[in-house]
Image (cartoon, rainbow, N blue to C red; front, side, top):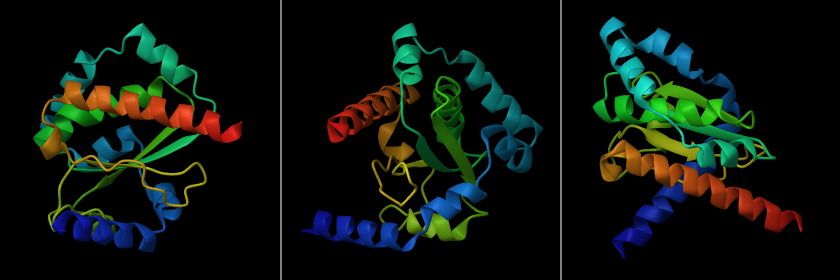
Length: 173
């Protein structure tokens, strides 16, 4: 019963946020790091970024996307989970001209933080996949504190992206 209440609360928060407008106000990966990261934080993010390598199969899958995918990422440059996961998102975006990610600092975006709170808490990173038109369809909400290792998150994201491509293809037919 408590799970249903949490899901209902999450749905109500999703409906009141204009995610399309919010997406347009977001920052690219580089802009986000430049704006919110200090020198040490940028160094840590760069070190993880340099370690991430997509497989050829993953690059092929991502390059084959035919429809645009807008993604919001609520993050913090100070957050260890964000350091270990957000650089992966940047690699996913670089592998496909159809993936567009905008980053938001948790503390500088109280409206988005409130809309995406998990069990009443301000967790980061939180990733929201929007519908192609940005209407606010939440495909996945992924709190890092529940995922743990960035490799697992990487696999989940690629699998979810693949599922979305399949769903779009089925919908078109």
